[in-house]
Amino acid sequence: MTRNPFQRYRTDVIIVSIKAQRTMLQAARRCYEGNVTTGMIEGDAADARERILAAALDLVTRGGVAALTTRAVAVAAGVQAPTLYRLFGDKGGLLDAVAERGLAQWIAQKQAAVPLPDPVEDLRASWQGYVAFGLAHPAVFTIMTAAARDRPPPPAASAGIAVLRARVSRLARAGRLRVPEERAVALIHAVGTGVVQTLLSLPPAERHDGVAELALRAVEAVLLDAPGTDNKTAALAVGLLAHLPASDGLTPGERLILAELLTRLAVSERPNDRDR
Image (cartoon, rainbow, N blue to C red):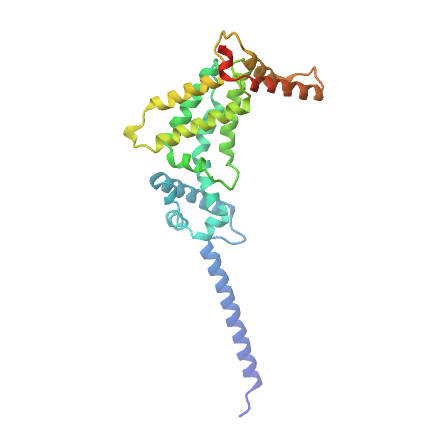
């Protein structure tokens, strides 16, 4: 029996239509599972980001960094896992965003704070605030101070270091700092981080405030010249270095030579030399 050509044509059309509908359904399913489409409304993305960050910060606060898994965050935020990857790239990006969220308000307060008249007291207040923040936000602090980082620090962390540099620069301009500024910044940051990590490793009942205070005194003994010190060569050299960028009476070459000479003076004098 010969098949009617018209019927064969209708069958082919139906098959093509079914395949097209199947393709459209699969594409729609992928978009749904990812909670995004190429034309995703910006407000929807922003809302999803906020929910994810809030859920991730809550998970880290309650259970530490180990509690932050893609599945746990997705469930808590009410999104699908692909949304996390689209908005944050990977787990590392999400961790950085969580730390940024936790740090942002504190850094903003530090930036807006009026410096104390005495640069030494200003540094002490900053130290106390850093230790208090770390103890109050252990999860955020742990993310920020992870030993192995394969990415640059979030903007809030860099802003925090910039605030520390500004305080150290005030010490230098006041003639109180007797090591180069970058060394001072590195030492203060390293010791402060170590103090908070040590305290966090102890049960709350065993955390003594005196540990942070003693560490600060040790840092000050290495970095600062006491008022009235007879031998102030290093402190004067560091102070001149701090003022050097603002000097207009030197050529760039002269400024470079003077900076090298002042740096050599600043680092050549050992801490105990001033007492000899």
